[in-house]
Length: 56
Image (tube, rainbow, N blue to C red):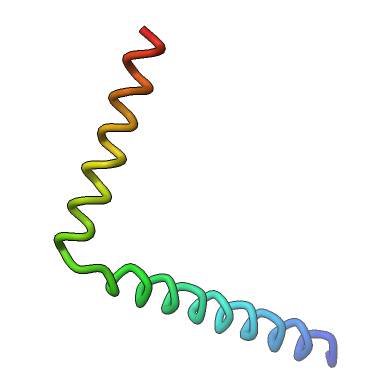
């Protein structure tokens, strides 16, 4: 019966760690201004277009 408790604590720790990682990613994502996001998307789109042109 004791190993069930250990397994439960390990599962709880895993869920908590996942929540921490997701919260950090969300904070990092929200740190960008809308203009910075638009600029990054424009750059990624231009790179994707350039890659598609070379493949065709």
